[in-house]
Length: 252
Image 1 (cartoon, helix red, strand yellow):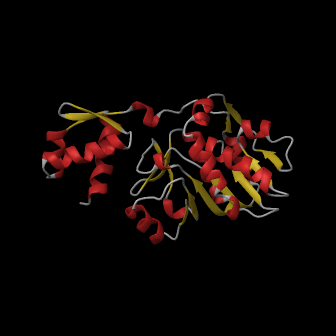
Image 2: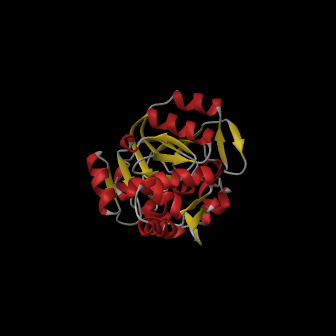
């Protein structure tokens, strides 16, 4: 078993049990305790766990569905950098679907100032409010308002999305994993993003470096469904090899 595969399995245990013990993991994976300590050290550096005497506990914020304002201010410089890199992937006059993530919102801000004649279908209440004075044509999905996230979800939103075919879906997520794909913390958000992806000719995934090797509650799509991954730092060699194997172009 490769190191990243073992860490993914440790994460699965953590999401179920919320804590792990070095000795138990060493026995389960038939490796030394020192190997497990290195695994937990890596997970701690990624912000996923806090190491304790003899083990580690899951950082509960990893799976939290944070309020939009909190998400919008977190890693804002990284999000704006990612937004600046999306310009070459969108042409004047393109049709787009955009989720309600704060990273995608920054991308739409960038595109509103650099592109002409864009039509954007979105479930983001913030986008519907902020882009009324821009040149973009904005279409609302409608649906049930999730006040915490500032998004519209549910059957109405999904039915609206199914009525449109677009050039690109621009989405973000809570985490991406080599073994668990792309994950989210909320089921309604996940279902709508999945529908957006199905209606798009190409899929653009926007993730900052903190989303790599993270697993949230719900898997909604395999990495192989993504055409372009835009991030703020060069991914690890392990990730670069994986993305190349899956024909995903990486932009950073």
